[in-house]
Length: 395
Image 1 (cartoon, one colour):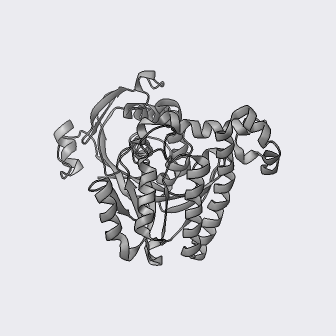
Image 2 (cartoon, helix red, strand yellow; image 1 turned 30 degrees about the vertical axis):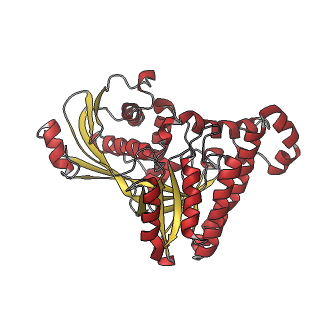
Image 3 (spheres, helix red, strand yellow; image 1 turned 30 degrees about the horizontal axis):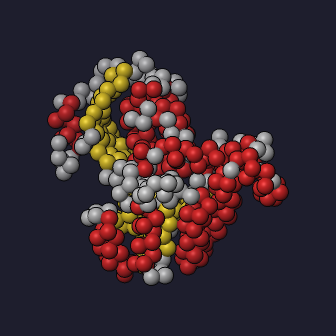
């Protein structure tokens, strides 16, 4: 299968002529503009939907089986008679399909077999939330193909988060799924996990003279689920020391008075990660105010502070004890190329994946050329924010 062939043609090549109407689904990638590991602690984040996506074409097949083909990755099948989480499917795409089927069935829909072919322009393992995009693509497909009430972006995002937590086995927050479901540039607050609040803003960084560039540093963070899981685990351990579930429920002054005890009982890294939470939470709110005011200089200064907090306090740029520090090297080299302009920081969950840079528009080509010389052709990509979120349309 060639990546240049339209998905409709690839569907026919793989599954034959559809016996029912074809459905198209598109879900964007996301960039975490602000809020590094604040969402799972009830904090605030800013997410941006990107012009890279997962696209799918699907149709009912008249069976009780879902057949999925992913261009470049192969395929799998799931039997809709069994939608329980399976240990042998953890951290696989099949677990995402089964999990979303379970979630959509819980809305009262009757699961029906369908064929689906998908293609992604999201670099895998680079922190742009390709797994969340796949979850949402399955969800929108099942929403349309299985008769039932429409599902809003927030509800669908929560279904996708539960799927990733329970079926895939990754204890993620809701940032990735909600940012991709909503689309655009959005400020999201997770103080109430049952009803996260969101606000969207029409904002183009390039109108202010800066372009968003993400650099894949060549270290696949998809293999570092344990290190990723330790971040919310340690933050929640600090909250539990105060009888709370999330850091948003802990008074920071009370934390200050118990630092000695917490260091003794939990160790230094959980204390540092809790400090990052309050630091980054403040920076998120200030960055959103800066964006609403159109103050790009303030936004960039606050972004640089966020990057320093992630590296020093959250410690999610590299894996402790490992000789490879690709993301840290990338940040250092990016700063050399920026020469004091713009900003750069670790992106997403961290531990490899990608770094984020806001680059003066007139220096984008030189920046990408320089980073690609160090990290390989195509490592760097210039992205733009898109207004569309997870959507479907009948063909």
